[in-house]
Image (cartoon, rainbow, N blue to C red; front, side, top):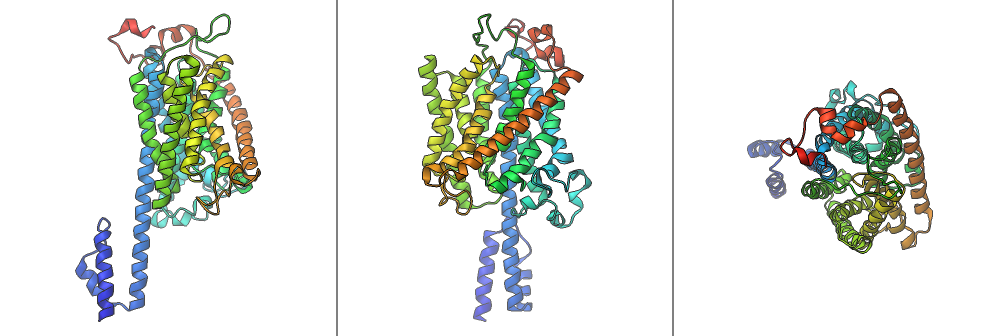
Amino acid sequence: MRKRSMWMAVLATGLFIGGFFPSGSYAQTEAAVAAAPAVTFTQELADAIANQKVALDTVWVLLAAFLVFFMNLGFGMVESGLCRAKNTVNILAKNFIVFGISSLAFWILGWGLMYGDGNGFLGLKGLFMAHGADNSPAGGEAYSGVYSALSWATVPIWAKFFFQLVFAGTAATIVSGAVAERIKFHSFMLFSFVLVAVMYPITGHWIWGGGWLQKLGMWDFAGSTVVHSVGGWAALAGILLLGPRLGKYRADGTAKPIFGHNMTTAALGVFVLWFGWFGFNPGSTMAAVAGDISRIAVTTNSAAAAASLTATLTAWIVLGKPDLSMILNGCLAGLVAITAPCAFVSVGSSVMIGAIAGILVVVAVLLFDKLRIDDPVGALSVHLVNGVFGTLAVGLFAQDAIMPNTTGNGLLFGGGFKLLLAQLTGVGAVAVFTLGIALAVWAIVKVVFGLRVSRAEEIQGLDVGEHGMEAYPDFQGFLTK
């Protein structure tokens, strides 16, 4: 009788704590306890606890995915704010439509190419999610032999899919800002579909889908390479084929500043992105592991904070003023750089990574201008340069004690060059593939549909030419500046 009372106390406590996920009345539970053998009851209790963990993990993964989805607003605000008023509608339209394109492209083909079982280069199973994982029992368990690379995550298949979808959409959004103010809307849409359906998933399979780089020992926890540098390489290819905006470079080759029209929305956008990154990095645990998600949140924030400060100081020294656009991009650079190593490094190391990223982004912006590579919002400096740096930072700053049996120690903590070489190999392979394929895709789109709007349309603004409307119709004189 005392044994039964003890079990009742344990169960009552569990039901109180887990009341958010009720499974029946107390009276029903008491009756079940009286009727069931002790062994059966113990198994039922263990199953209930396991089910509650899956439920909690699912809520956490979806919440993190919602935060990453919210980053679309941040990108829209940053890009539109850093560009001219006459192109605001166009930039907002691109940022809005790109997630719709990404959602369907990843559902139809990208998910299977990235996570389907196959070979070291691409997935060959589950290529068309449209055939219905929702028809499988209990949320997708029948697909466990199709998407083995994600079998370690116990949440339902649709939670896995949605979390990975918002990452794919982020990669496509990066391209938007880099090619802003001169690209045709429909050409951008076409490229975005190909990027998310084919290009992004293939390199993603190499690193996250059980592919050859993963087996080589490359690590990218939340996507400095998988998401950010892929978007950066694709954007660079587009810039090279588009050319600079009219009036960006003087006759002597020096860059002429083209100021953004609304620094308020740009700053708002970066705050949204900083907030969303707490889903981007901690959410990549795909489980509500208290210690891990707490530590990753702190390393993420610390890198962003340090990068904001060093970008401010670097701009102050080099430009003579603490340029707000540099401060904002500095914060984003720190977030991109810490994305790959966030789970594998100490808080102290995250501060160092962020500090370096803040310097790199300012130097990169000035370098791209000298090279006449016109990037209106600094997307290459943020996502490409610091995506590469963040990936290499794993090979430098990783500590095995922080997440045992994963990366091992990086170069600066006695691990030698093995990890750093694996990271370098990954960076190089993704660069060659993505830049090469992106150049080919952009070139085909250019030949078939054209890439750049007309000179007259670019001068007038893409809002009227591409969309037949204006973001600020009451300020006609301001729009042409």
